[in-house]
Amino acid sequence: MSDTYDLIILGSGPGGYVAAIRASQLGLKVAIVERERLGGICLNWGCIPTKALLRTSEINHYLTHASAYGLTAEKVGYDLDAIVDRSRKVAGQLNAGVKGLMKKNKVTVVEGVGAITAPGKLTVTRGDEKVELEAQHIIVATGARARDLPFAKADGERIWTYRHAMVPKVMPTKLLVIGSGAIGVEFASFYSDMGAAVTIVEMLDRILPVEDEEVSAFMQKALEKQKMRILVSSGVEKLEVTGQGVRATLKGGEVAEFSHAIVAIGIVPNTEDIGLEALGVKTSKGQVDTDPYGRTKVAGIYAIGDVTGPPWLAHKASHEGVICVEAIAATLGKYDRKPHAMDKANIPGCTYSRPQVASVGLTEAAAKAAGRKVKVGKFPFIGNGKAIALGEAEGFVKTVFDESSGELIGAHMVGAEVTELIQGYVVARQLETTEAELMQTVFAHPTLSEMMHESVLAAYGRAIHY
Image 1 (cartoon, helix red, strand yellow):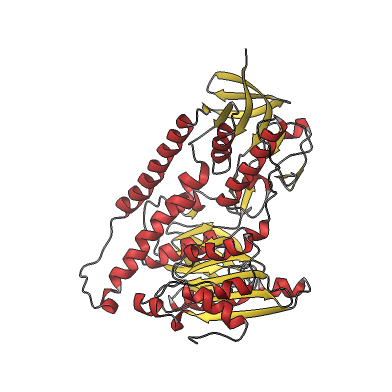
Image 2 (cartoon, helix red, strand yellow):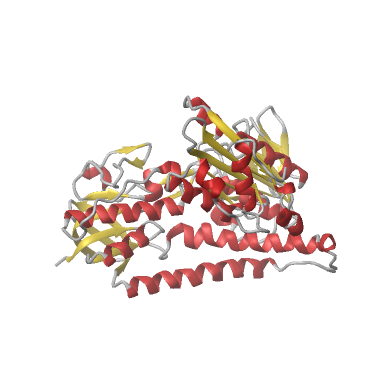
């Protein structure tokens, strides 16, 4: 006999487990199915452990540049096993936290590989055992995995995906990073700060291609100043494992030797073998098609997170989970409001490299391409007292406003701690704030956030400190 629930969630990443908690809060009987570890890729193999690694490389950078702060640090070194162990312990602590949250919210956790066998029915396989579950509503939150090069699949020894790059057995000496999105640039930053000679290869004409063009240009110069080699409008045509490492044939014919290569060319949604095709759930290039509330064309089947397409971000998945569950609860008479569909233009993007990058809304070029007349303000880190005191005077804040309405169309930042600062602009956009309210807001002194104020003022010719 099947176990029956109001809602079953397939996948426990930041979309799935947040959806489960919200569903429980609304009085639904919930089960969540996970084939590996609660928390999914983000918590166990992505967002969190990579930030632990990047914190290590940041401290290593400060130690090796201690003299800039009037300090002396001698015989600076590292223990690679201890670095990896710390990162894994951070992930483990948060995995245990998610387990605690499931217990606290009375969410049933079913371990195993799940597949939807019919509308409202899901089978979980663990070894030789099969568990049958039933629910009127099923959310697919199965996430995505790293995309391999078609001619050189990752082997975990010399050719890595992000997953291998988080648990290195040896520190690369000469590293090739293929792809310059957030994942590629973050790993390039980590390994460069730990002493590896890094080359980044990007097929498009600039690194971090989803960011504002001025941010991309600044980042390329900043990384090159750190002695990274950046090749744009390029590509890897052949990648061979050798006795000493890998040999790459680059676009244009150059052949170069590296100790290791990281492939960061995107992700593939996990939509195979979970029953979607047989049910008639529509997908586009492997991504599940949904409406703004996570509903597919098949009644009772929903999808959220990376499996539904870009932006591939944990916070996007979590918010989609909340929206989807509130829509489901409304149909069950357990929620008396209509949830708001998410505006993807208000989702912040962050890259935790050195320097950091953060943005929300449209770039200047995209705004102009959409026919908007804009006012643009920029303010440099060198004009901010706190940035100078921190020894982090490289970077800028850029704001883009609609000329006629004063709407904040976009904000783009590069420099120290901008991944923390960006939320101010995200809140401003969510509240439909104009330049007037932002100008009248008092920013604490001395803080990095003052640059946000100055950038707004600069868009209207009123910057004070630059």
